[in-house]
Image 1 (tube, rainbow, N blue to C red):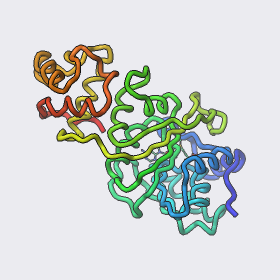
Image 2 (image 1 turned 180 degrees about the vertical axis):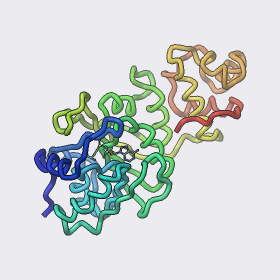
Image 3 (image 1 turned 30 degrees about the horizontal axis):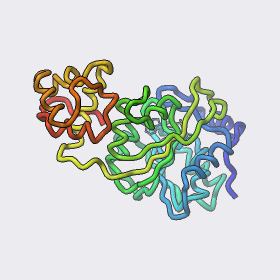
Length: 288
Ligand SMILES: C[S@@+](CC[C@H](N)C(=O)[O-])C[C@H]1O[C@@H](n2cnc3c(N)ncnc32)[C@H](O)[C@@H]1O
């Protein structure tokens, strides 16, 4: 029988390790067993799943995931935490100790994993949650479903559609890879240390990218440019990529987009149509 972590055991573990949680690494640990159970249930984890967890920390979510899944691959940047996790699992969930694989690495740099994940479930480090998600979607194509906890504001942005106040670069880029929905909120009080933001749960369901002849990096460069100055009309925002605002207007019109519209009104398929009509300029690659 797995013993999930509670507030006292989280603090005891941290003290034993001499851990000082850092903001820089987004180290806020869940201390509430009901919250981790809820995440695992909402994620729909099954006994066939190999779950990729980013940032297992002290193991709060990992223990609950191991109870439900065939295996967990946990990628943790902090050597102290990564080193301590197998012993925590052996102590609290010995029957699942062999189902855990810990990878000590920066999730943003991981390109291979010891097992192929079918699902991603994670309480993501908040400062890098969007780049980590985009990296996982691009690098590991086999996972189809995900549930992640992120800062509430970021959850809104990830799930926003065109025309919404919160629609922006993360929403449009996520839409290239997946359908994204906000499926819950989590109060700050379930963490130690208590963060000064609320959290949101986001469900991710992979889908085929828009049909386009444009390269994804080029589409992402167009998205970056369109939102770089949110209030600018597209013909001005894309002038740099197109060479001039007249060339941008021409490409936009050919793509069926009003040159005076703003980026916040366009879905990812429209960005792809625009990218098809804009020259690929050498220079810094689009951020993923
Ligand atoms: C919000 S905490 C979540 C901890 C644990 N999953 C929980 O729910 O209690 C984020 C975790 O991600 C780790 N982390 C931060 N940046 C990372 C990165 N770039 N790659 C992998 N892990 C990272 C932190 O060390 C920390 O353990």
